[in-house]
Image 1 (cartoon, rainbow, N blue to C red):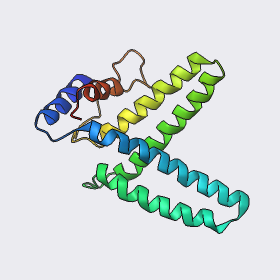
Image 2 (cartoon, rainbow, N blue to C red):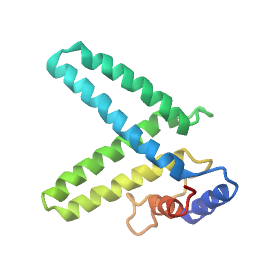
Image 3 (cartoon, helix red, strand yellow):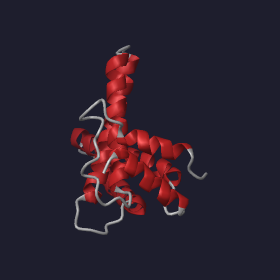
Image 4 (cartoon, helix red, strand yellow):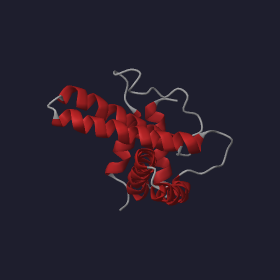
Length: 162
């Protein structure tokens, strides 16, 4: 299946009112931040040995699990749940490193990391769409000349319901 077919499938789902990515986009970014908070609680505990960070970590983790379940449907035996968490976390980290590089006036390197972050974010949505066979979709990270998954997602986000 090519990226164009993926985009067509998403558009068909949108027309049937079965997919509205804009309704979940903010939630997905919140989930990225919750994963980051879990990490910060862990490192704060390791540095300080203060038990309050472990208590915070557990509460944040439970909230993240509850909210992730709104997007990620555990309907098969795949690793979709865990993959989704890691797609979001990796995307957020690459975005943050890109911000640092941009601040350091390393624009080319920052843009590359932003593209990679966007691709991972696109893969998160790909894994969590109704699409069953996405083995033939070419990822921009692998081949720069191919149309990226994120560009397909980006087209959808332009016209989603508010």
